[in-house]
Image 1 (cartoon, rainbow, N blue to C red):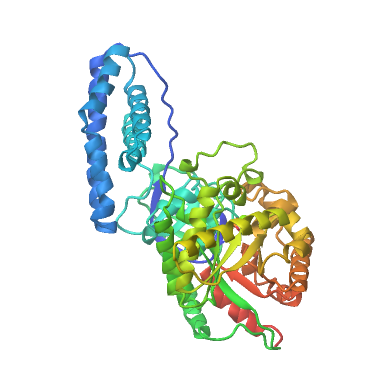
Image 2: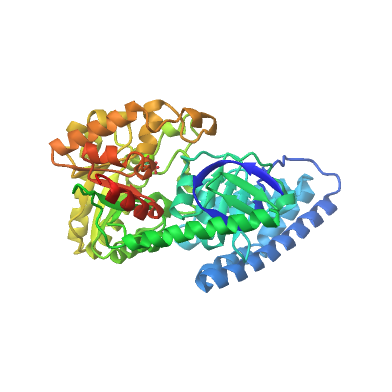
Length: 540
Ligand code: PEP
Ligand code: MG
């Protein structure tokens, strides 16, 4: 039995087998080879292995997501059989005497450039596929593993670190818990774990080695420990604890349908944060009064191309319809910093958290913004939608946003497309926004305070940097003063004010927030009933 410690992201206990994700970086360089025939044979062997992988992926996708989605792997197989592509690679190995990794990569890039320049949309889309299959062959040549999760039974993931895109791409029904060696409790991967109600540890003192793959383990989010190959007594004790936690959760369900009202009569809205359309299940099961933060950027992560207007419309429509008239606040695209998608082709930056992200991207690349706004407005006809904009720093930005919104609405009206009344709000997550909240409140219906970023920017502490966690004090008086100021300024102008950062779930502050006059708390679904319980005991 081995025990390791990490920072718990969500209380809860998981028991299961470990699934180790070892990320090996690509290290190949261009090389001259003397024996080009064996190099060509090495390429052919890698191609064969890649074809077998695609067969497996096709079968897996057929079972999980159906034939239409599985077809992509068939297309990839066809590309790996394309004579033109294969001959170009082999000729390159023979005539230039280069290694297979180089020949495959350069050929992939050339073919991709040709596809990209075609007029036909179908052919254009193949540009990414040819890069994908070339990358697969190179991965095999280097002996690196396929990224992602390939398991039939649910597992405990053990990884060095996981980005939000990698996490999003995994089948959540197969994840019992996450344990990472790196990572901070304020990262979006941690936030995702909370929204999925999965016990998780970050910053754990364990070595990531394949030797642990398949071993029985316990993730204890209460004590923050990972126990590998537990002895019988430990296993029994943890099973007991797990049952007690489940029993407490069951008891909380008695609060479904009850008001969020203190014993002395103060009320507050309890809404839910979510990121994936499937999360709406948990939002409803935990009796949220609405959705206070739909992190729409998750629709853009874990994929290779922009989601179309239609795809987004279907996602928003499903969430809005299933909420049956309860308010759904969609936060427009907040990409950048740790939330990355390659197809945005964003430049690398020295300080990405202070960089080209969120509304700054939307106001610069307006076609992306307009597509999203059209999709949200179209979906608003199916229930109660509200929109909020992230990373705002000035009145000027809101005016620009509102002009674009008006333009999109006029466009839809011109096309005879129906849409509903949509409340507009902004996130207060920069000290600048909090300080000018009196002016900003004149422009919008509501504020939602993003304490994760507000804390990061107020304290000048990178929320992603695990070394700084001892300094990341979300209860810092400066943060609490900015929250109070925002509530006061919002109310003076008739705007309602909520908090949707992780601090909203901190029940040691619930009474403070009520005293400040806050109107709404938006938290991961798993915290709703716990907070309701807390609220109902205040003022007793
Ligand atoms: C926040 O910054 O508090 C917030 C809710 O947004 P995100 O965590 O997605 O940056
Ligand atoms: Mg934020």
